[in-house]
Length: 418
Image 1 (tube, rainbow, N blue to C red):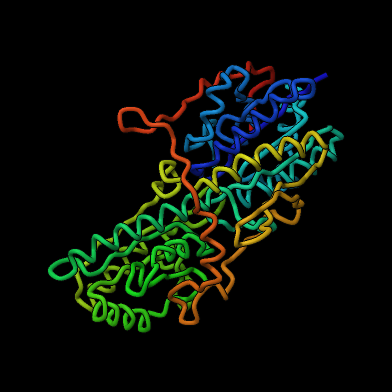
Image 2: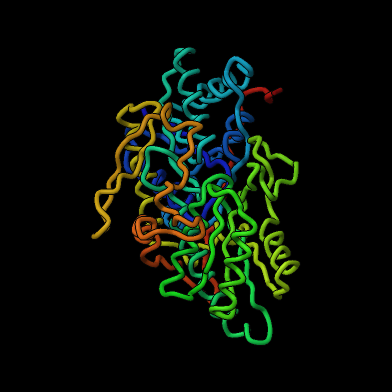
């Protein structure tokens, strides 16, 4: 008899994570003999822990198809990290209890590093408890830092957004530099890896184009060298545009913008390093500045999403279902680059154990020798990921996004006390 499949979204959402959800649900609906219903976790793994499940069979085929062009997380996400099984066995036993109660035999978790770790741990506890569960991780992260995959869904669209934004802002500042603003600083996401910062560099197609300087988390901030470059840039071009990673570190290795607050995953809350850099320039060189913090805008901008990114996110969702039906437990569908020119890719399979809690940093040869720009090798890597437009439908000048009904499944168990 057909069993049910559980799907959940985790961590910071992206403009294309729902494309993966679309791929999962559409693929599952093609196998009614094996998959009864796709049950989604309301607010990620918390939906499983608290038996707060969504029955996606109540959604029309048209609504599910519209997920492909809708940003955000259609079922809600969460920043919640399960502890090790020996530290919190009750939570893992609760997950299996819920899965058993709702005849769930496949667990598909759509997220980043911590989510792959969760999927791996659940696969292990299910095995120990002799419960037949297949666990599949579906990669997602704008940070592009998952290992064993060439790139991560979500990154290509953020890369496109920051490159376009830098290009447009650069033209604006260049227009005003003679009598007004000469410095523009854009702070982008990226806690440890500078992939998004590097993507902003794609906007500079010719000498003098914005951005003129990139500040990566992989390169310790050298204040004197940086200020000298800014000063020279203003003399040569009349203005200076800078992209800086939120994870920029000083020579002592400390985050310049760490607030002291930590999120549910234990990560430092960041923000404001762009203003720090802009104020430094103002106080030492005297130039008027403007600075921007795209924040959620960069990861939610579906209107300028990369067609490549959308296609890959959707394909990985479909492939996850195929792997689940093939009983490929504790794995993650991963992108392998076949060639740069022309760009070609395929989907391979990585082991969750090898992906969980590892980070893929920017290779040093992707960053220029002086540490302030990207190399041709980096351009060749990122450029294909931003190619193509996948414009959502528009009505009255605004994009049309779907909001699912998200009908809940009646609970059958006692409330979770954890």
